[in-house]
Image 1 (tube, rainbow, N blue to C red):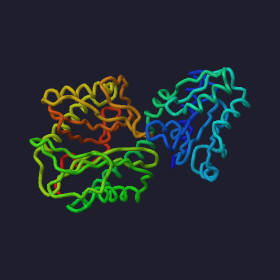
Image 2 (cartoon, rainbow, N blue to C red):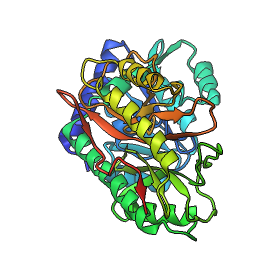
Image 3 (spheres, rainbow, N blue to C red):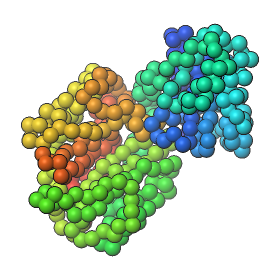
Length: 375
């Protein structure tokens, strides 16, 4: 999937972290049960998708990295498809990691790790076995590398966004009275799965939306609820393609337009557009959020998040917030989907999509119609 040039680019960048932070080793951890927020450091460096159990990679400054996997049958696949050549089956990865570090004589010294991914039990065993090691947080440093997307990565992100757009179109064809939320989601995910999506994060809600009555849909995972005429559907469509996530958020009316929904959706889109005026290199993430909050307040709506999140190898690589001082750099990808709440808090909605920071501004990766569609 990736070129040798891309693999070497990543290895060089990671080894620069080892050198600049005076690390004797770097421990990368992948956990199939950990969710989608912090597995990205291992995936980025190895091009290895953790699908079962917990895996560990030890990166040294001047030799081939080593992966320990609890799944023996996966080792041959890792050697064929990942960036790694030294892949070892391990019934107890942390025990093998500890023994390997001892054999290499890496003590005393500093070893980098992502503490969000390091289980407490593993941490205790490492500290007991290697008491002179200073364990150092390195996730933020690796994330800064990950945000500087190569052309290969950007091309993949565009394909992922196209899958989200196509999934939305497939969902529109499926939506009609009598169809369940599960059936709509099945059509959307079938579309992207058939075209290479490795997994999905899909949320959906349906029901009656009214500002005067204060009725709102329940937005979460799909249920067996069957769609009725006069319903509103809200969908968060998030496929992962070749390791990279993008997201599209859209609302749909069934049978007839809904003026209340369209009013609030219009405000959400205008809030997003206000943020996009600040969305370019050199600006900070907080500049984007403050612009969105100012516009929402000006229109009489309480500014309230979430406003979105950075995305890439992890679905959430960082939250979009008014406290985020991170400077926007070319290559960073961000899902912007500002939520808009009515002053009484009884109704809310949101819309949005994935944006790429370019050299002179930004690119909207999704091309689905931004307005509310009635079918």
